[in-house]
Amino acid sequence: MKKKNIIILILSGLILSACGNDSLDIDSAQSYVENSNTENFLGYNFPNQYIEEVDNVKFDTNIIISDDINENGLKEAKAVKHNIDSESIMNTFFNDIELSKSDEYDMDCYEDGDISIYVYDTSFMMTSDDAYYYSWVADLGNDINEKYKDKKEFSFATDDSAKEKIITDLNDANFTGDFEISTYYLDDTMLEEDEQILYNETLLDKDDLKDSWDEEDDAYYFAIHQKFQDLPVQYPDGDVFYEYCDGNAPITAIEREDGYVQLMIGNTFDFEICGEYLTLKDFSEIANTIAFKYGQLLTDAKYTVESAKLYYRPTPIDGLEEYDMVPIWQCDITDDTSGTTSIMYINAITGEEVAC
Image (cartoon, rainbow, N blue to C red; front, side, top):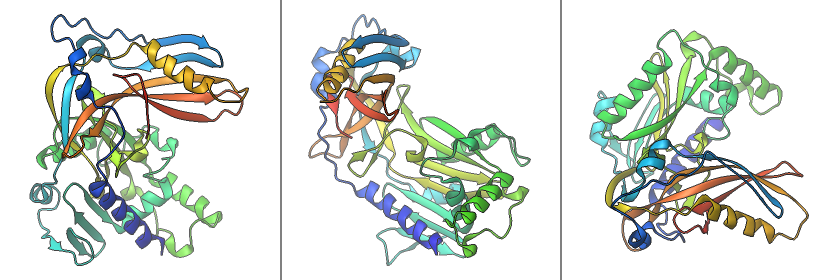
């Protein structure tokens, strides 16, 4: 049955993200501290939009960065992976459950009835039989159907109160700091309709269908990213950094009237400011890096840089369990002929392209 396979895949992903190779070919922020200016910091002054045209590359680019960062800057910082405090998690979310050691996986676990809980050093997963239906029908964890972002208010709680609950619970379980949260509204009627579509398209077997959907199945789905110094944090899956999106959020939760149906925590970090202001390249230099790359392509294609958003990327320091926090531009670039979109990552300090 697909249900067991999905749980195994999710669990394997959590283990890989916790045990990933800590090597990545990116220049660290630490190397550039001597260029920082700790006195009379004048701000970065990135514009809201950058308009230019260089050969086959058109820049009609929305630059996404907060006013606070423009005015107050970013300081050198480091991070370590957050170690799961299993006692705090269990006391907060599941105070009547006692964990036992798994013979199959090197982690603490609990399995009883329709609930499964797995606790590794830096990751955690609580799931249930019902979580399977939500995940499969709404495609949670992948390209989540945007129609589920249409705001609704369920009878058991407002979205704000449900969001406040998950944040409070995370804080009580020693996950603190700032978060960027996306809310999806898993409405029972929509879920039932989409499940039937999947069945009609033979993507679900009859045995995989939920017995029934009703108002008690209404749930909020939260995709939660960490923020640090007002920048969203791009997080790794093993030694690979994927696009920053809700499908790759390190913390996700399905919350309904009877509690959490699913709670998953992958790689998260503890941060510390430890140095001076970082000097970032002017965006014109970022644009030159993009134009040079796409100008080397042996095609007649033209490209438009639609947006550039600044993120923090925790970059492993060789030989240590620490990470440099490196500001990275994620640039969305459209092929004007085919309409396809690609992503280019650029180190905001050096102006050089970086790999995923």
